[in-house]
Length: 298
Image (cartoon, rainbow, N blue to C red; front, side, top):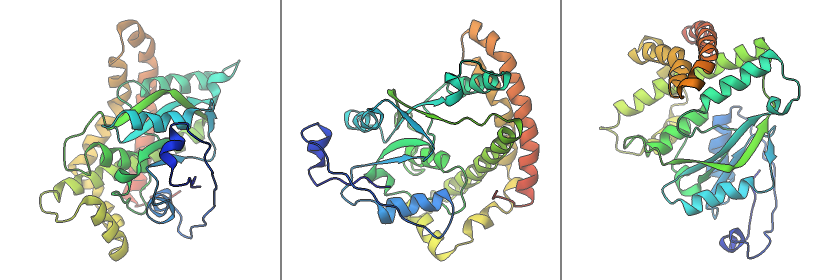
């Protein structure tokens, strides 16, 4: 859905008046979140919009001002391109948490260590920046691709840590996946999608010096004129050096995240990190089989 305001929207953001808001639903024939993202940004969105807000339908906003805070953060931080909130699992509010719940929450706490992360469930971006981006059709982890494009200015510079800003006053909750089978399936999907991004990033960097168009425009052209370009790129991706580096990174990531913590917290979180690494190793074996068999859809 696309909130629409009158051209005086800057006055609305400052609280000068009450906005007039309407919404509509678009039915898209082609499936896939990356395709829906392209359609929203480049076809359905208001051409006068300064900011885009993306959210999943199954989240719950915490407080009445989370969306406004995301927009305000970009207004007051000119270097930031995308703002994100704090993500909370619904199980964090349960009075009686199971062992699976506690492990899930501990893993989330580990993942939140370090710089701000972009999650597709809710974020706000500058329209001028996002309109320069197109996503490959069939990409699974579109938020990872978006973060890379924004942080590196479409692979034309080193990663800018200030391109993404987390707003502590804004938050949302989502229904956590807790059954072992569902968690495993979700992990496998994330691993396959992350691997897609790694292969894609390597390709975009390799053509960086010789391209005559921005990356976004190239992907738009490839999507239209070479619909099979992305599957073809992935076909031999498991033979690339980046694949083996990828496997090492994802297996050791929980331990490296734990090492960022202070000693008391590190000792407390180390068992969780070791369990997480073992779980990821098992999921990676399953993901590798899907990758080799070119199974990218669930």
